[in-house]
Length: 594
Image (tube, rainbow, N blue to C red; front, side, top):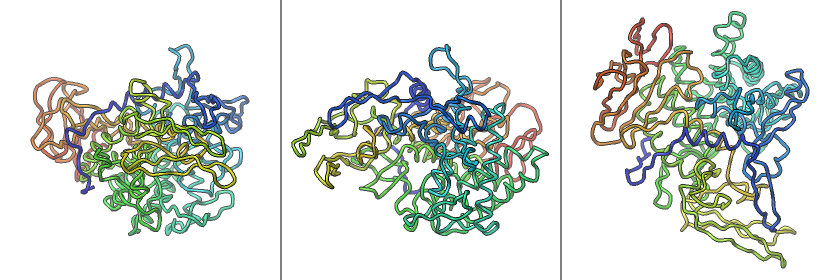
């Protein structure tokens, strides 16, 4: 991350990511919210934002009848999804984001407490038990063997929810059962010498590798390592599952061994991010020696043999600061995505906790990305543009031709939705289109305008993927990765970053652990509110107790210039063991040696 410049004061604005998350969840869970707009031919279209749909797999799993699951479309105005629950990477992520910011999704209400629903239970819709796959996939009735990331990411999101609802026993049952299935993949790919190269996926039904002849996804190893390590984490203290737990850990290591032995990046999609926290946690807890720097660098720039140019944006687009965003650095000058950017925090933040020598770079990234990610939201870009009419074959086709964003369903920054409904992505410059005759019909011909930058849009509307807008809910639903972690402090551009927020492997009762990165050229004093006045503060970076300013619960902490501090709040009493930098207190694993 050495080439990532930081946002100057003139280019920085804090966004309340927690409030963004809450506002988004309340909107997409309210059945009264709908998309209403006209298509290119002027026909009025009404499409629900969210809805309940029947779920056969829930009926089978719970041995019940009439089960329903909450659904959200991938894009607002995606009419083709109106009768389905939508994608797992969208719906499961939304419930996880809500849980991360403290909302109880087993009894949540969007109507002022009149009706409470268990949205967590509805996620069983994505557990494909009816067709025998027995893993959580991107939709009901789907099969493995198509594309690793769409098949593994929903399962990773689902299993992460286990950390919040131990009373929902079916979550652990599904996490363990699905991990058994993914363990089969590791064994079939070579066991101790598992090789994820040269394939796009693996078919559980056929028990064989799958390659679509177009691309490979070696970062499936990272996603499966995450799933298996998570399964190990929730079974390691269960005496009845001790043998199985050991098998999960062993296979997770086999996956990580494959990644550690690679010289070129396996980065195809977001799964590579998950190799970072697994490597850091395993090194700290299990004594492995995985190259964490290599895992991080994998995510910054993909190898051409996998997906050339996929990684982190480090330049400014159109004079606007865009550093830290994740996506393609080469697609028409660059194309960053909300989902990828949010999910990078899922990978990076726990690594800063367990391997503190990376805290400085990760702190810099968090400051940069949290600032740049504002640009996914309509409120952050001009609403200038016009309604364009293309006449093809005597028929008028109308569409909004925006200068800096592709939609106008949200008409301006004063509309509250502009603050919590983002576009799918942000482009280095405008990627608009004209309607033209071609292929025996009317198609969209994409045109570039490098004078308009940056440009927020997506694929559904701009590329005519069946959507009437580019507002991408499948990315928006991952916002909790930022919402749970980031808080404003009393010093501009110094964030309080909760390193426990995305650590779904943390022990119950893990101590509060916060990262403070100071981008200023002078030391800064940050206010800190202790949970109890008598608690002690420890700097996990320097391995020293912190001398605080003031007394009582509301104190101050000094953060040196261009440096990082990780504050671990410890109780005033209790056995504390410092061994090689590892931090144990009353048996609770907190952080680790650098």
